[in-house]
Length: 203
Image 1: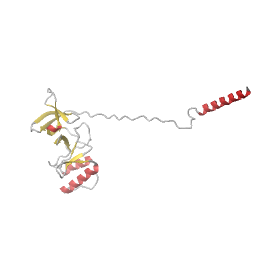
Image 2: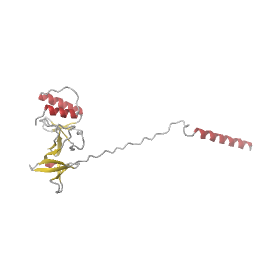
Image 3: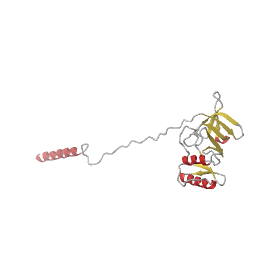
Image 4: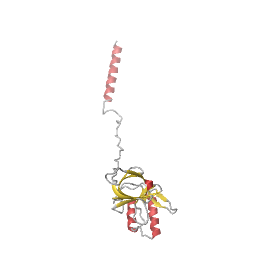
């Protein structure tokens, strides 16, 4: 009986010691830290109606208001009382809309799009040198330039400039060919567009 009593006391003392060492704050390992996930939600662009003129492939003109449809078409409204007509990119020759993103474009009154094959491209330059991107916002997404810029290649086809290094090389070569003074420094897309507006201001 005495042996059972001693064994019981030993078990109770061991449980007490374990309970004390396992109290919060005394556990020898750090607690897990839960980091909340950040939201990946992107505020959508709200495209607006813009006055403008569209020239179609058959030579006809559309004058009224245009709204980009976030795909490969614009909706045309001749006036405030008629139902909108959806016009896909490939039917346009050119589209000129009132307003411009002056933070990246050299012109302030309008934004011009030109059809090349079956797509519309925003023209970023005002002179003889043509530089394009695929952004269809007018002034709804300030400072936005396309991931790629496009120029006419020597073979007469549209050439994609895939990164800033390629864009700078193209600009340097263009300055050399036209005998334009240009410091040999690395420029951003916006800086190149604005410098072209000074070097090549005449259509």
